[in-house]
Image (tube, rainbow, N blue to C red; front, top):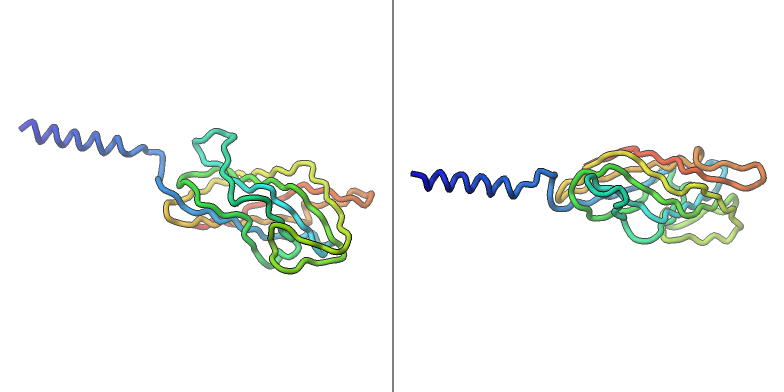
Amino acid sequence: MRWPLVLILTAGIATSACSSGTGPSGSGTLRMTLKDSPFSDAKALLVTFGDVSVHLSDTPDGTWTKLGTGPRTCDLKRLENAQDVLGAATLTAGHYTQIRLLVATAVISFNEATTGDTCAPSFTLTQPTVNVTIPSGEVKLSREFDISPNSTTSILLDFDGDKSVREMGNGSYSMSPVISIVTVQQ
């Protein structure tokens, strides 16, 4: 009579030991896209993102997971009525708390528009461009989202060129990136 009770208790303990309670296991995909409210005075506004990464909750503050590899340059002027992929990766399923974008460089062309892809490893312009100073190239967006196992989460970001770029009065330009999260969809 005691053996069935021992077996039931053993099965219950084994089942609870296998469940950590920290959330879903496995992995899912995160796809981050970008659109723009462009800097209206330019024909091209090329912004190079050195890194796009996300932070998983319950990990140390300095732990970030990168989406994609290497820098990616986007012509924000051409993203007014379009979207392009800024980064994508397979991530550990779970709860994420922040998105971090590192803006490495920016240049403005007042005379020449770009052709081809809206985001690429780099662009070549034949006309002179104006370098844009970026005092702080790190942008952190505090918006929580979940990555579910075997599914894709899509996040759309809006880079507001008109609010980000300012003429300094001496012919030079400065950028303080203004980026917002438009949608998070699973």
